[in-house]
Amino acid sequence: MKISSNTVITAVIGCLYVFTPCDAAKKGFHKKKLRDQSVYTNENDRFLGDVLSASTSFPDDEDEGLQYVFQFSTKKSLIESQDALASSDMASTVLMTMGAFNMEVVKIGSEKELDELMANENVVFAEPDQKRYLLNPLPKQTGKYLRRKEQDSEVIPYGINLVKALDVSDELVGNMKVCIIDTGYDITHEDLPDGSNVGGNNNAGNRWDEDGNGHGTHVAGTIAAIGNNGVGVVGVNRNGNVGLHIERLFGNNGRPIFGSTIIGLAQKCVDAGSDIISMSLGGPFRMETESQAFENLYKERNVLVVAAAGNSGNSAYSYPASYDSVMSVAAIDKDSDLAFFSQRNDQVDISAPGVDVLSTKTGGGYVAYSGTSMACPHVAGVGALVWSHFPGKTSEDIRKALTASADDLGNPGRDDEYGYGLVNADRAFKLLNGDLTLAPTAAPTPQRPCNDDPLDFSDSRGNSCDWYAGGLFLNRCLWFASSRGNDDGVTANDACCTCDGGTFESIKKTTSPTVSPTETSAPSLSPTASPTASPTTTVAPSSSPIAFPTAGPSSAPTECKDVEGWTNSWGSGCSSYGYWGCKWFGDSFENDGLTANDACCVCK
Image 1 (tube, rainbow, N blue to C red):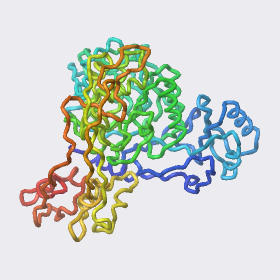
Image 2 (image 1 turned 60 degrees about the horizontal axis):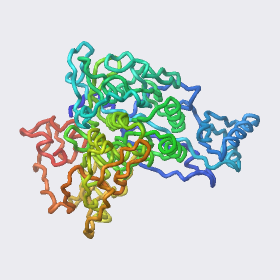
Image 3 (image 1 turned 180 degrees about the horizontal axis):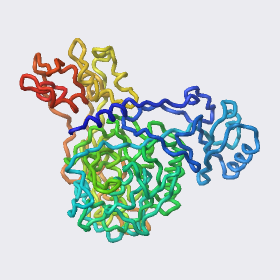
């Protein structure tokens, strides 16, 4: 991938951007009712940094001080708490109320006041209000992809074909509404719907029907760009009739927002009649209040919630995608290979195109971006497309159908990289329509236990495998694991499980489980009952009746050796190159007819 110098600077700044938990959270004065806060590896996403307008409706990153989210046992106790706080001489103030969940967000005046607020016997629990970030995409700014408004031809992005969207009629999508929580929507774009089926809310002083950032407009194009109009691109739902509700969460430059704000906007989505929520955003810290809110929307309010898995390229969790009630979407390329930046963990549900995705550009024209942000709207769009034909099904039915019918990728069955595989609109439709029978497969191969080898490994700078497993906004395996070999020539890629090295213990082979007939029969067509035959989430279906092999590789790959004595035209050898060094400069600084891409194993 060719990257401009401007992009390089942006990437470096983004990767060096670090935030720390609030002082109060580190002090740990949250008492017995506060949920434990686990520390997760931070995202390695590139976040934009300009100022978001201050909000009178929602708390935002402009607010200084400590924010907590409180949940009360009843709505009555919530109101009583607000009245008591308003009549007291406390400096603490209520910033926002979420009556549907008996929750309020409070700006804390002092540690003593937090203790007093926590002493209320009607407080179920409280926790710090964590920040959420726009998962900013990696742009591909080339002439091939910047198609201007005057272009008179229409292009079908590869992702639309890959998810088989055009194989399913969109004649009924007018009965579906997708809520996009993002940076807004360029309603003047020639290739996006602008009729009565499109609406939204202005938040934090930003209009929903404008988008100075471009992220939200790009997402919307993948879901709903108009087809057969002779210009631009085609979305998953292309007839212009799918309902769109826009909740503008971020300003033009994507400044972080608190998790409580997302809860409030998600409720607005539901109040507007949305069936699906699409969120290309995330943060590294779990919130119990946020988890409960999305659980309620998914199971009680019949809303399918879809979110981007994250762009740090490691196994860290990103929220809200990593809640059980939210579909976490990984990114693949046009060859169905996992994108290097895509999160990989046990919460990934499904995959979709997320590399060089062509879609609508704010201000007119079209641009290709990469990121799990681009994969997420493919799944949200397919969900709306399929669900429109089976409006009597529940959000849980649709989620099961999408995962059960996905094209299996990676290891047989569900895996942490691809989830259940590539979302497939045609197969999901056929499954719900009774035209597809899923063949049983052998149980997925169990994950083999991995041990760091050697256990006391340290690289050339004395860093252990634990060091590689950490990092703030930086995937240390990507950057350093192949280039810091110790005196024995062993790198973290060889020794550390977190970098896909180490040694694996053997596992006992087991026979395939007996699959009951209900797991292979077609689901019921009854609009009032859940499918009777959808596979459970513990048995991943195969896209083919052919059983996949479960044995591991028969031998280790051939060892790669650097070209002995090679240095580039600046005198730097292979040891000076890491992942990004190869990415940006691997084809440059030729010496003796060779570049780093030719001479160095780390660049191959």
